[in-house]
Image (cartoon, rainbow, N blue to C red; front, side, top):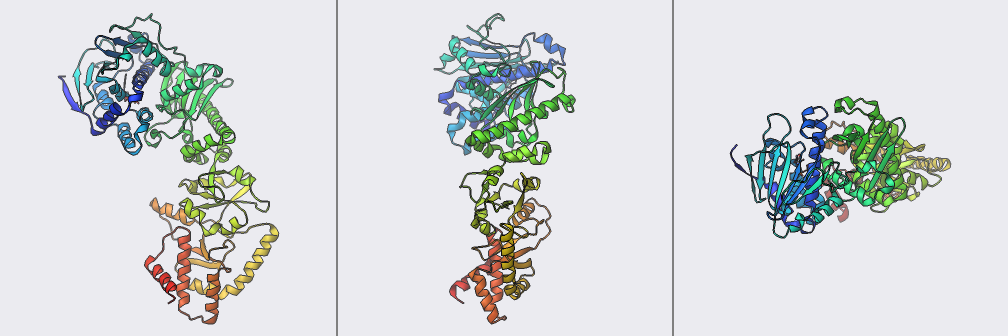
Length: 626
Ligand code: ADP
């Protein structure tokens, strides 16, 4: 192949410019990124070696060399990992704006630029950080396998790069950085050693340093200790080390919320190091991205993103599992139905859920952070993991009529704060918090000192189907069916009162029903209103308004389900209407009032009016005293 020049996609150029010009303070991270890539490449080669004996012959020892040349001002990072084909090179660090780069550029536009160092790893654009210290980056790579040829990639980060054929003895990748002026510190062994210790100590193969442009000999003492963190005992690991390992693993440079270090012995033996991140990485938003843990079997890396080790609803957890109970020549397919894997999964799941429960109790602020980031994903577990449903329920938190602006209440807390007369858990499904807080449906409950949970996440609609009850307390929708509140005597009392009023209002309610017969199934007096004149309620087993809107938004066929209009007999508007009705049943104003009541009820629950123009005209007339 003769030399070919290509231009970077616009997004890549944008990322490059930002990386080069905005990261003055954190230039040193380029080494962490390049070493991380080299170590990934070796992990993958090692895995290939399980089935392909030529890999082992080729690379008797896995290694990463860092070679400095003070005269030439070059720094080389070379690995004997999987290498890349021309196509891969092009795809991974070339023209194609891979989804990571695109999303990164998008995030940069949206977020303030101060977060750039954190964003870099998360979006899988670590390679470009090389341009922070290098004016030219050259990659020479040879992919493992027969019939592959070595390729050289060169770029100055200024809009284009070139590809050409070259030679390389053995498979692997060499990255050559021609350092910019003022970057000489990265040619000193002490500085490189410091950085390897800081960021890359746990990389599993030796990282050695060579000077004067010469590769280090195999007997040179490595810069890293290579001790896999999960194999060391908890007591000797510093928090900082967990954080660095998490960054390496998750490409997320914000410290994790929680590290869970497990060494399980007994029926199944494994070690695991799991992390609960602070915030959702953008990978969680990518539907095709696999989620899961990295699996090692007796020190050998088997693969990343092993989704068999984690249930879907815990896919935000990052980490490593190392087991000696699995065969080395495993494949994903073989593990699909493996008893050991299932045991590990169930053990890990239990541990994560109990860690979250502890966090909820001991460090509620951390739990709130967790919940804001992953609460929605966790809720999916109610549908998929029946075995752990009670534990998941215990972790749920909701907004409520009593809780302040941004706070949540757990079901346990809700029950603990129930007055004696309250026997059930009340909730309202709504599109948004504001509508819920001002909903007429909760008036009588709030007046009684009962709290009402607000289910305002789209997924809450499905959650409720699984919730049913908690600790023997039934969950009751405040906008459905008949609502009976208070003690047994109070219930009898209010029923009596309502029946008496219903008698008085019988003719008027029948009249209103006749006026609204297209829209409502029934008109009756309400036990749930104190301040509002009216509201709409659904039958016990029917969908409420918010659910109906959601289904329609998802293009689902929803049969029209006329609801019930409930009236507040104590409200002045109803009293006035009754007086008008008793005086002259033919008064044409009455029909308008019936329509206005219905309109108000729709607005009160956050639904749209049937005919807004007519509604506003009627209101204006009323204001003008017409
Ligand atoms: P990330 O490593 O987060 O995916 P990078 O921009 O650092 O993002 O690298 C992009 C891709 O290029 C990697 O996913 C990998 O496939 C490939 N790559 C980078 N460095 C190497 C290397 N030393 N050996 C083999 N492949 C590499």
